[in-house]
Image (tube, rainbow, N blue to C red):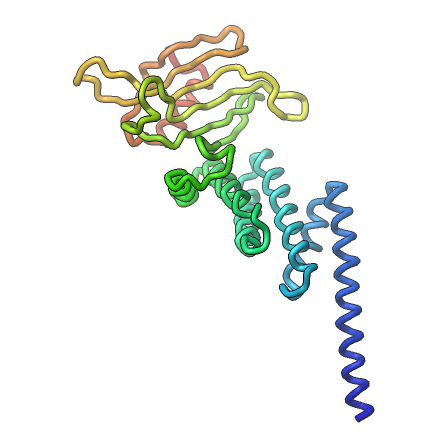
Length: 268
């Protein structure tokens, strides 16, 4: 009997020590996260999330910080155009977000934003077929009016740097024939920014619109026309680029190739 009591007491002491240890590790990782030591914080939060029972209140907060750290790591890699690593972090973050959707309401919006980030990473890796999977998520949510503010009208699908400038590609959800496409309508817009020393956007130089073309007769076979509109660019030309036209649905491989040609000055 005494031996059994000793075993039970030892087990309880071990559990209590373990919980205290995880709590201490959690506090340590929080400090690391605040100081920007993302990888160190990520390792600890991931370990806690994997080892603490979900019934423990510490689990909820470990999962939250685990996801937030992954999100920061994904963003840092994406902005450095290290898309392979960013995609890996993004997929892991998406799994964590899905675990927490019954715990934190804010995870619902975060889930959509991470799908958007995965699209950017897939485009950076030229994996447009894989990107379509996450684009379909956004389009379905758009039709059901489920998207959070900031994603509810358009979304960023591509980012890259070009001759020291930042280039951001955005796509609008409506398709030709939808009420939103009446009048002037751009399905896709690439924004070109000069950069600050830290690599962030400074001035918008110009935009490249995949613009709806208003057909004057049935002989016109294309639906969209690439158009360049200047903002703060100096020594640049603007106008409609009739060498670059598109039918609906738009061939995104062609758009991307054409945009890079224009960035390189190949247009009239």
